[in-house]
Length: 223
Image (cartoon, rainbow, N blue to C red; front, side, top):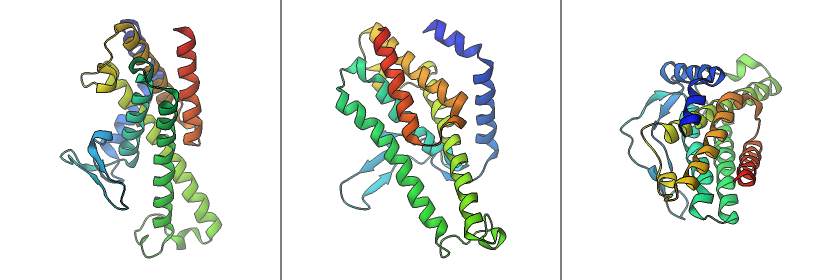
């Protein structure tokens, strides 16, 4: 992946977008975040309410999109590694569905809490300030779109770091065939770069899933 790494290092648009994400990471204090959230940090059982997150030692007040993006990136890395691990198309499609469900469930629950006067008691986005439900709804939609853009940008940055950085993921490292592994890593990098540079182009997670699937198809066709 030497050529891919060099391309990343010379990509001014990519580096500018990453610099903006880093600035947000160190200056935005939207929420208490886990800061190392991935599928290995989540313990879940079938019962309602039996989901737990472990390893919170890096938690701090930061941008909300960082945790969401980390999970999205983790799922996409697993998706990109599929051809090298012999994953069938049904499981690959399931991974993209989980990515969409992750965002949709988060957005739905977050909005329910936000719209409940008993829960929304803070000083930001006060109902009296917007004066009407229509204005409040518009403000909330704009906020959620910004949060989606942040999440996608952080997802892409996380993916790039996991491919060409020091800390890798087992999904890719377990692929023994070096050519297959390189193709999967390159596919992951293509998805990641698209998310970092063009996150603002996506208004739904379904569109992100379509992009990833199209990229995988292009990669399969060229292999």
